[in-house]
Image (cartoon, rainbow, N blue to C red; front, side, top):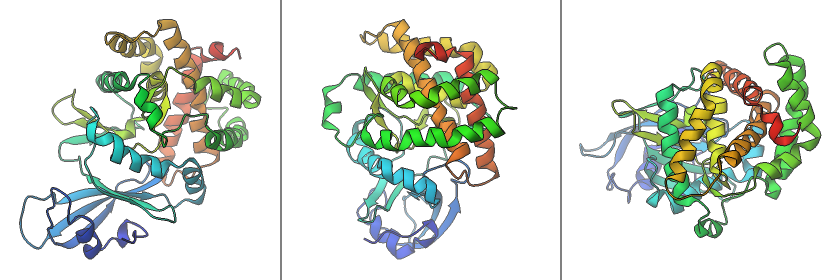
Length: 361
């Protein structure tokens, strides 16, 4: 099947054919498709829309689903294709999703074209769940629920021989990363110095300057073991929280998943998605929650290593802030607000946790 160019190009005929052998649609004929953009200001590497469906006959099939397609911004698309992130998410749905303990959207249809374009049709979670808000930041309850969910998932994959079988799952110092990521950091540094000095601690700007000539070295330190299956993009916009059950949460967007330390997911979540005051006062308690949960499952991982690896991850993830200010198109006003929250939290956090000590800066 030819992949539509964008969500608004999806026709009733194409969608009926794509879903004809998929439960719970059961060959139902779709007579009308409404398209609503739901990704503006939240996604960097993908176009995301809600499809509202009308059927020829009444039935039990869902009347809405979510479609995910490549981003259209040239700079973002170039990085996405260089890192192979679209293929990665399709592989996740094919190989990992059927047996994962995570609550994730059901995938109804996925396809990758020869030109690198892709499409995923997946479950709409909005009836039961509400998505987190990166701009507002996570509440204490949301943080603890997310950490508990991640700890269980990390434990299942901790140093598992099965990781070696996932040839499509990279480490974050693989050649494609080393070729692309340092340049993103360095492109953002002049903008950080010129445009953000009045919004960030002077110490964080100093740390960024010291990281510049050593960023590849940091990547290797960050990308070492112990390894598990890491989501690697655990910011709040990728979490869905149940309307009535705080312990029932879902996780989306596996484009950046990797073989990595589980603690990296914790550092990324707290460093980007928790308001500074809450994060600075509670990061050790949050980290200890995750550390205790994995150790309860017989994993041997020292507290000192957990802290050091958390600090290294926080340093590495400054590149995410650099990408938002120096390389990527954030899309709209909401995207700009998300970038503001992301950058200020990330650079404040490396100061608040003394991250420079872990890399002798």
